[in-house]
Length: 340
Image (cartoon, rainbow, N blue to C red):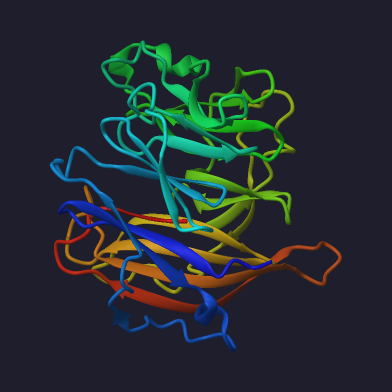
């Protein structure tokens, strides 16, 4: 089955986060479209609002994650809210054990949502890794504390941060870290054994989250330097520790036609797999700033692409760009966005 909707979430900088259901059918209707920029249009009306009354817009950010059909929101005060996209129902979840700060690394594996601090904070000696799971005995959701990664126990002044993370598809979660000056290393967490292992002193050549797509037995994500869409085989790289990171298997340059758009600063990229070789790539842009130190998001561009095996004996993957839609948010209304 092919997913029809992508859920677009934006911070309105006032008192709520708004969720919109974006129909992706027009992105794949008809033949390949012109790569020129589509006309900006206002986004559809929100279907759900997550209240954030009384927060500081720049410091008390709520974070969002995807667990199956559920969108999980976690506020600054560790409260968990779950919205089921298949039934349009909302329920309160358990409070997170320990705060995770901004942009925590995460992975959804085997019905659990794994969450770890992306940045070391002044309470770095406290547990920083836990998982949200459904407890069959209590018939309720719980946050379960897990062993913290070894790099989280180092001196605070090293300022280690997570720059990429992935669920490889074989029961391991990958995490790459760096300090302010160099790549610090890459680690894997074995879900069954609940143990961490260092894979090497290098970082994965990706930025942000990688997604394992079973249809291709590959992880899809965005390149570390260029933000191009790319793939890697982390399962094959999961043997002995290596001196070099896994290489890109495929790289598609400027696949959505927005690379280098004048005055547009990339603020975030999301990849949503719709099934049957179809993907929706969502790019959040800041079109108002001349510098990109802390870009805001006033534009979201959603692009439909199809990835298929070629007919050659080598079986390379071929990407076909379909169509894009550009959504323009009201001036000063959006600080950050998510797409699931």
